Amino acid sequence: MKYEMVAGFETHVELSTNTKIFCSCTTAFGAEPNTHCCPVCIGLPGTLPKLNEKVVEYAIMAGLATNCEIAEIAKMDRKNYCYPDLPKAYQISQYDKPLCEHGYIELSNGRKIRITRIHIEEDAGKLIHNHGDTYVDYNRGGVPLIEIVSEPDIRSPEEAREYVEKLQQIMRYIGVSDCRMQEGSMRCDVNISVREAGSEKLGTRTEIKNMNSITFITKAMQYEFERQVDLIEAGEKVVQETLRYDDATNTTSPMRGKEDAHDYRYFREPDLVTIKVEREQVEKIKACLPELPNKKLDRYINEYEISEKDSALLVKYRNIAEYFDKAAQGLKTPKSAANFILTQIFRRLETEADKEAFDIKTLPEQLNKMCKLIESGKLKNSLAKSALEKMLDSGENIEKFVSEEDMAGLDDAALTKLCQDAINNSANAVADYKSGKEKALMSILGFVMKNSKGRADANAVKEKLKELIG
Amino acid sequence: MVTREDVENIALLSKLFIDENDLDKLTEDMQNIINFADTINKASDESEEFDNINNLENVFRNDVVKESLPVSEILSNAPEQADDHFLVRKRG
Ligand SMILES: [Zn+2]
Image (cartoon, rainbow over all chains, first blue to last red; front, side, top):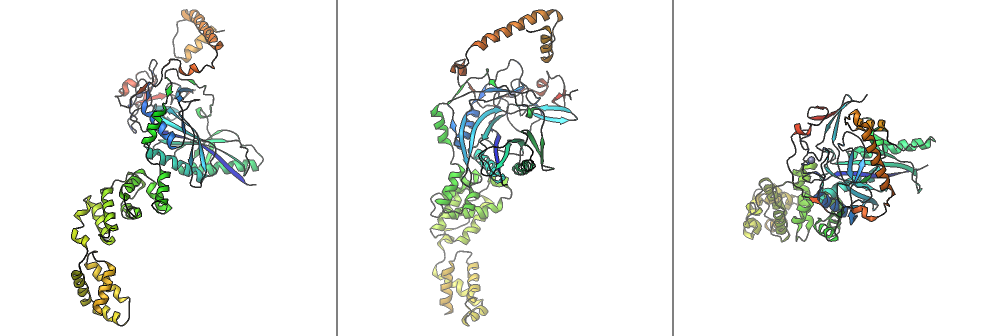
């Protein structure tokens, strides 16, 4: 029998606001333990939370960028559970009135992964377990999160990878999160079940919690899929339970403790007032969103006629795409700017982090200028290449390396002189050429090109050489 | 019915230390609180007004960092601490 994977995601994304969601403590990562805390975020009695305006704005941005509807009225609720990472014994979250609902992310195979909802909530503290004792650091407690919940629309680990990468890319583009999985600013829970391929009925699902690497996610899903199929084939039942993935053994195992307790007794957070989202505010936020990666990709492929592969490279990080957009402005063939970026500039960026930062000395306006000079025929490609290297090294403008004289090319007298010199110095090649070896001309041509420092036009040189040799 | 034992137990869970002499009075008070909650239960909860009981909306804070408290003050109420962390001992 053929089985099909059915998976849905709950993705926690830490928002890159300056302050926590309900107090003015900083959200900066990596500080000494319990130094980013105040009476509000360690849950002392008598304190009152006050919602950070930016959190609402960022969540709405995330919703709009994932095609969600934005609620007119939203509210906060308490999710109760007792565990040392929550000083209040409840997490302030959203239950039945989240900020965003009914969105989707489109995958490259055309399938839409529906987004059920996006809500805002506070992160919990960090626990360090040591010989059965628990050390608690509340620096992360109260850092704002959005939780993005998808429908069970994902059918394979490959789709899961693309879904998570797309989310990551979108959140980074709109600037609401850096989505660094290693630092925990993006974490995924995956619920997964199997069913007979083609069936509409959902099987019993398990949930794999808290994964912070795309590779682990895909491996865990594959493992869990096979485990469930084996159970069914053996006539056994899949037990609905919460699992953790162990990357060392590439297996999943049941989790116990807070993650398994599901009676959260949600109720309205009485200390926070209703959130009312005016439609004008939504329109305003929408107008400020940058062009999203999918749109850019379409534009590059269809309008700019850049290959799909190259377009994807340009779109991957917002800094690259924005640089390219500026460099391509008004060009007849934007592709030429793309080529300079993907070859000469990319060669200088070794890691993904380098590419993401895209911190290079040459301004996009300078690359644009250079491409325009090439298009107008004033600047030879070979000369442009070496000029760009020097520009990238020094950050100096193109004028510094390409003189008017260079751009003017060679006049006939100069060209004749260069060619004659070359002929005089290549007796053998000249003789070969005269005896009918067409190829010999190329070595003389190369000689001329080199001596002209890229200023000569290869075709003009060829004609001149033929004329002079006779 | 709320019993003396219930109140003792709640006090223990809440880490409150109660004078033996106050137990009867507190048991009675607690019973009154429960009775009051029963009154609330009789009210309909379908009213939309529950979404906005204070008639307040959109009370926000600007995203501006203020100084946090020194770690010594943060930990000053902790029953146990170690290495600038709250310490939760292994149970049992
Ligand atoms: Zn705080």
